[in-house]
Image (cartoon, rainbow, N blue to C red; front, side):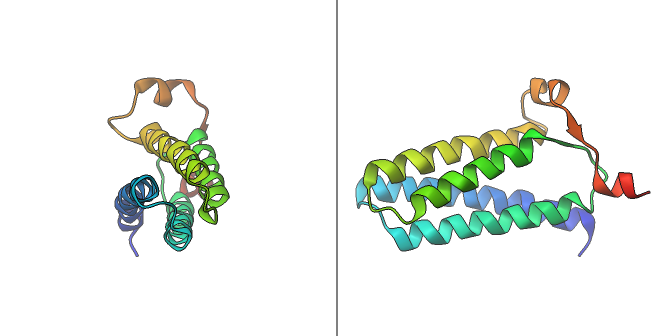
Length: 131
């Protein structure tokens, strides 16, 4: 798969996972926790993390350290709340994870705050280091 295609897939698939995390929150608030749905969404976010890792090793664009750190924090929270049937825990974990995922997206997005792009240490692109 072409490098830009993988990065583009990571971006668009990530948007879908944000919507799914939001859906878990809404379902938990309206109908109560649904552990099977919560676990599926957590795994789908894991898959996007792996796709992002593959994209990182094929890109020449530098990435902020905080992009993977925020994403990993979100994944941890998603898995912490995924099996729970406690409504408050599910809503809290998935809500904080949603904020972390949105922040991870903003770190490298063109629309993200300039502060993210100028004040955080950048990971050199793996493809650029290999050359």
